[in-house]
Image (tube, rainbow, N blue to C red; front, side, top):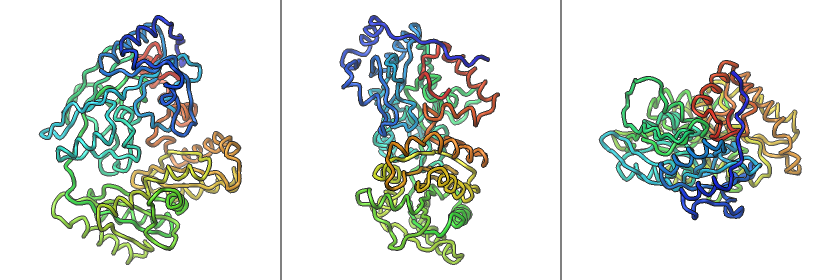
Length: 479
């Protein structure tokens, strides 16, 4: 079918007034200075303009806004916490689009212990959702470094992953039902707490990960799990990526489902964190090529997780897999160890420009992929500093590249497209993905065709045309 995008129109003054009347003048922002927080992502890689920023307070207001915009053929850019890393939440630079920020939809509607579920609105922050679950004696296991500012709507729109995917799955696996507004303003009331519902096409899974291009998620029923009785956190130093793989194999064999996180960092990533993140200290005096941070959780006997952790590290030492190891002795020590991993993205800002890659390769191929990627980057930009870290247990590598020492930032970032294209080519050789958890947005839209087959691309366009025939939802993103 044709992939030509529908032609959108600029909003008229009359339409802008109608939209402002829906949300009230305090929540219809037209002043450029007041709009700024909604028009730029935190790294300033994407900065747009908007005819208006709307902040609806109810699903009904979202419905009325979309109905008007669809009839007028005006582009709408859904947004919640504005923490996305691929520009999916930022409008274009022509000033013709309208930003629809959902942060006022911030109610926890219900927490149901009997069904181990809770229903929250799209503007609820991830931290607030986790707190609500904890208050009910449950755990919502999605966990991201940005949880204080990112929101459930954005988490679902991008199918967020994080450190708990290994045990609990991504946002899609943690969602039982949705409420969403379609492009024409109709509301799909799909909030259910059922674990089984085999009644045709799964619209929930279709909307999750669609980056606001098929509908606007306004609320979700999320899956809760029992809180672990105990979590043991271990940190290990390793001589090679092959050793990281060997430790992962050993831990999965010995711990099974008790393994709830397995993260890895290169020495350069760890060094950046300890140099630039407040209160971040490496647990070992000596430097080691690679480090692993992992959690063992227990739901039964107190002390079981720690005993299992000790047995794992003892076995790994006997096999010569690890060079050194430490076990957190308290909650605060565990938090300090996790700060080393969670600060990896933040710390790179202090080292100049950083070219980011959120990729995935089969777990067994990580040890082969990273050295080849390092050599590739060096050939393209001598002196560039690869910074590899991420979720080893599910194959998600944040393969970032910091600028060479002494190189001008803009000159380095000018090589982004060239370096990323070659890294993504290498990812394809390993049958990997160019976006493991951040989405496609603007950044990777043009590269999607290179990694998706013609049939997939055609089907995606057909789905988009069916649900958003006028192309008003997040135009220019994903497809």
